[in-house]
Image 1 (cartoon, rainbow, N blue to C red):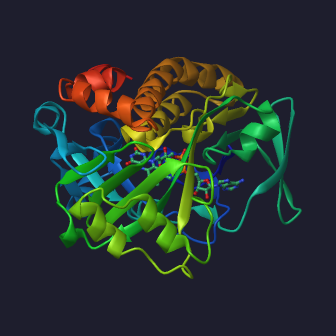
Image 2 (cartoon, rainbow, N blue to C red; image 1 turned 30 degrees about the vertical axis):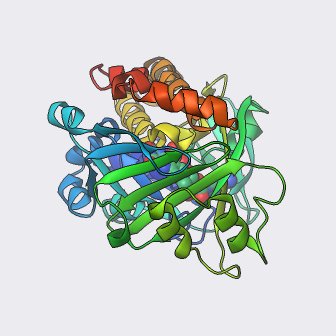
Image 3 (cartoon, rainbow, N blue to C red; image 1 turned 60 degrees about the vertical axis):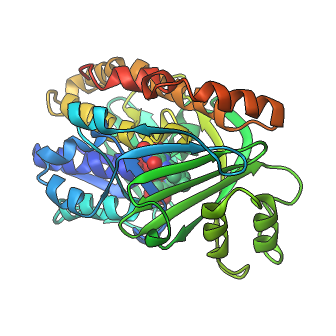
Length: 379
Ligand SMILES: Cc1cc2nc3c(=O)[nH]c(=O)nc-3n(C[C@H](O)[C@H](O)[C@H](O)COP(=O)(O)OP(=O)(O)OC[C@H]3O[C@@H](n4cnc5c(N)ncnc54)[C@H](O)[C@@H]3O)c2cc1C
């Protein structure tokens, strides 16, 4: 089976590694020049990283990760609202492990050996005829495949070429991402400040703590260039000592910073003919529940499973089974992420205060009920 995977991120690389293990070789393309791009932090649940056991990569992954033992929410001025222990989940299913995206992608890559992986490569067109898919790449060359997997993320080109425009969900919030020394922050705790008109998250990994500083995308908050550092510091002033420490480490205005607009997308269809969507391309995730990467890995495992149980004449049936096994589960967890966004991203100080009082009474399972259920359901 000639398989093209478009996008060598979390989902695409997991799929390639699992297919290789099952004797199916894929061609991978990646728009970026290397794996060092998109160097942000990832908290992974066992839902997703369980596949690393089967790939023989788990021990390496765990050794390079930090276990997040607590999830802490603070208010607009840094006062503790709630500290949840992750221990009950860790005891039953496995710990929440935090790493960087390049760490995980490179680890998956290490299991691929001599795989056809092409950087700086994207696609310009896709045409399906009968049982074949013709793809034109950005260098003008054309190749024919039996299957094309769109694993090219939230703004998937495969999705727009084959399925057209799909409904986006916009929070109208966005935020800056940067790194601070992990020794300057609590090492085994995800700390989030759910403010009024602002949100400040601190996520430790072995390579430093990733910061996400979010607010409504209005005025000049999202503007890069001169004055950026001062604007960010002003926006997140008086959120407490921990936030001040992180703001002190803000990179200079001349350095590139990643600004992430918080939107997600939900494709109506995941497969058409011999093209199938995987990961964020099928259902993109807000970061609020920290579940998008886990879902992409889980979906990759199911797709690899279905592909290893079929042959070319029955490929489309295998793809339909993949969708049946995944769509509902993925969209349910996506709903949790949207629900959390509504709690976290509140502008009004009065509503934020009511939220803070209510949050004290929430359990983790109530905060993200579909994700809690997913731990104990087969895929
Ligand atoms: C700042 C931040 C923090 C996050 N934190 C968490 C977290 O803590 N926990 C969690 O589970 N999830 C988190 N996520 C979400 C998670 O990263 C995604 O859900 C996950 O990476 C989805 O995997 P994917 O393979 O679908 O897409 P990606 O990992 O985004 O991979 C897509 C790949 O396709 C490539 N690509 C894009 N377009 C093309 C094209 N046209 N041609 C070729 N290649 C292309 C991209 O360069 C990329 O390498 C976070 C995301 C961000 C941005």
